[in-house]
Amino acid sequence: MSVTVFSFAMSVVFSVIFILAIHLLRKQPFFLYSFGVHTILGLYVLCLFRAIAVFEFPFTMPVGLRNTYSTVFRAVWTAHITLGDSKIQLLLVLCGIWAVAAVALIVQFLWKSWKVARKARWYAANRDSRAERVLERVKRESWRTPAVKVCICPTIDIPMGTGIFRHYICLPDREYGGEELYCVLKHEYTHFCNHDLTVKFLVHLFCCIFWWNPAVYLLKRDVSQVLEIRCDIKVTEKFSKKERLEYLLTIVRVLERTDGASQRPPSMLTTRLACKKDGDDVRERFRVITAASRSISRLCQVAFWTLAVTLVALSYSFVL
Image 1 (cartoon, rainbow, N blue to C red):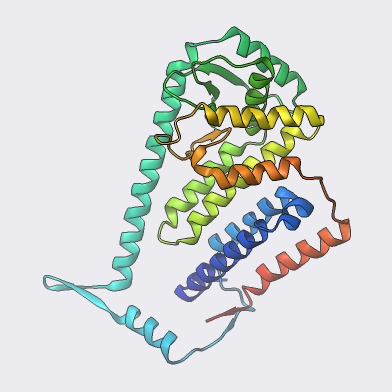
Image 2: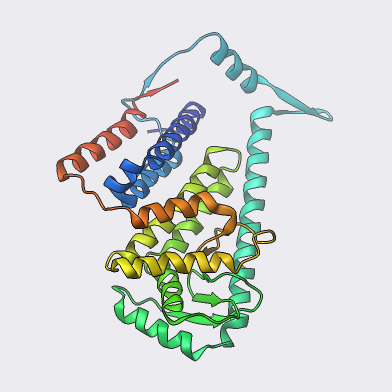
C-alpha cells in the first residue's frame, strides 16, 4: 500500500464524482422519502473516506494514458519556478500554497468558533424561567439528555443553537407563544441530541483542508440541509397532524420576524430553525414534514449499500 500523486489525483476525481452523484440522488423526492436521510449521511461518510484514503493497493492496476493527460502531468511535474539563483519545483510550490491556505482557513474557523462560544457564554446569565420550564419538558421527552442551557441573546433575530462541548440555545429577546416556544426548543435540542454541530464542525474542517475543490462547498451545503431535514423528521415523528401544522407555523412565524435583507446565511458553527435566504431549502423541509413516509424493503437497502460499497472499492482497482 502506497500513496502517490496518481492515487491522490484519482481520490480527488472519484470524490468529486461521488459528491455530485449523492447530490443528484438527494434532490430526488423518491430517494429522500424512501431511503431516508441516514442513508444520505452514510453515503457522504463513504465519500469522505474515499477523499481521505488516497492509497494505492497491491491489486491496483495502472492504466497508462498518452497525449493530453500525460502531457499535462509531465508539464506540471517538470515545471520549476526560479527564485534568485535557486529553482523550486512547481508542484512543491502548489503544495505549499495549499498547506498555507488550509492552515489559515482552519485558524480562522477555530477563531470564529471561539468567538461564537464566548458570545454564548456572555449571555448565559440572561436566563428565562419560562423557557427553562419548557426546556425541561423537552428533556423529559427526549431519548438523550445532553446538558443544554437556554438564554436570551438580544443581538440575534432568530433562535439558534451553538456549542460543541458546552451547549446553548440562544433565543431573541421577544415573546413566544407556549407551543411556539416548545417547537423552537425541541428543534434546537434535537440538534444537540443528534450531535449535528459536531458533524458540521468536522465537515467544515474538511472543507478548510480541501478548499481548492469546488465540490466540497456543495458537500457542506448538502450536509447542512440533510441535518435540518433529519432534525425535522425526528422532532415531528410522534406529532399529530395538528402538532405538525403548529411546527410548520412556528417556522413561518420565526421567518416573518427576521430581517431578510440583513440576515446572514446560517453558519456552520450554529444550528438555526430557518433562514429567509434559504427559501428553497425551507420549502424542501416543509415537503418532507408533510409527506407520507415510505418504506423500502430490507433487501433493497442491502442491495443499495452493497452497490455503494462496491463502487468505492472498484475506485481503488485502477489508477491513471
